[in-house]
Amino acid sequence: MNKIIFNIIILYSVTMIIKAQQDTLIYDSSTGNYIIQYMRENLETGERDSLVTEIFVPATKIEPSVRAWVDFKKDSSMYIYNYEIENGIKSKQNLIVFRIQFGKKVDVMEKSTQKWLGRKRQGFDDKHEYMNRIWSWYGNQGLEPGWKKGGFALGSNGIPGIGAAYFQGLAPILSYRHGPPPEHLEKEIAKLEVFPSNHVKRTTVVPVSLPVPFNTEALIDTLISYTQQSGDIGWLGKDPRREGRDEDCDEDEKPEDGIVKNIIKRLERAKILIEKEDSLKAKKELEKLLSKIEKIWKRSQEEEKRGKKGVRMSSEAYALLKYNTEYLVEKLPDKVKKIRKEEKNK
Image (cartoon, rainbow, N blue to C red; front, side):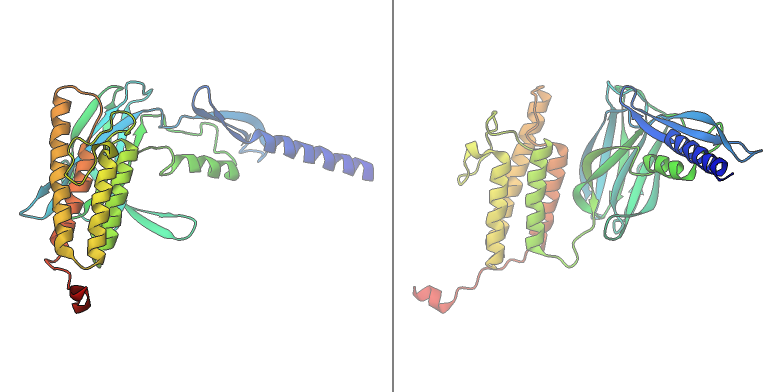
């Protein structure tokens, strides 16, 4: 009798292991889909008695891009963020969702189209809770591969910064035709569906909250970071080893250093002057930088009209450097460094 009971337990255990092994979520690299397999539960008997296979098609079979440019309205002190999106020719899905994400403290004053939907989205990282604003566009049929769409714009008092854009393609909705999978498998599938999973991410320009309290050194560091990131992304300059000369140099700059390095050097000089409490000279350095930004931007536009490949300064880099530098100049007082008597006698 004990032997029979033991054999029944063994058989039951083996059956449960086989069923657990059949509850699988596997990525198929040949199709880009996820294959879901699980034992269906019989509603009459409560037993899981037959193998079910479902396919989850991610909405990421797209190659999107986004172009952003910023205008400033002096009368309202508002920045207008303009976006144009494109679904790459190699995409396998129509592009149907476009989202931009920025911090919770940024307010949107106006938008160009009622198709923008705004919301706050709550999330968690390893250390703390965070909250972001999401502005989304949902197309009816979406953009076919190779198509572009512009006309997206948001007005905000937030100053230009670097942020994220997210995209989704048109994919079939996953519906469990034979009943839901086991709870543990359903949780794993849900991770593939929720934001920001199941999206293609791109870098773009978004509004960021103004620094409170204002800190000049911190904003200089931010500008240096924006310059370096713009170079890394491809928004600014070229590799100095590959025709990356700076053709808009001032007298204290070297053409062979390239655009990115020369801009960073100018910002570092301004930072040293601010630390020495000579904001008047720092302003002059930053005004030189603004003049340089305009010259590079003008040259970039002229070269684009002539069909020359490569971007010296994209509209994204122009917005980041121009408006953040202008904001910094406005905040600096006209203050000359006080020279001590001992320094005069030297």
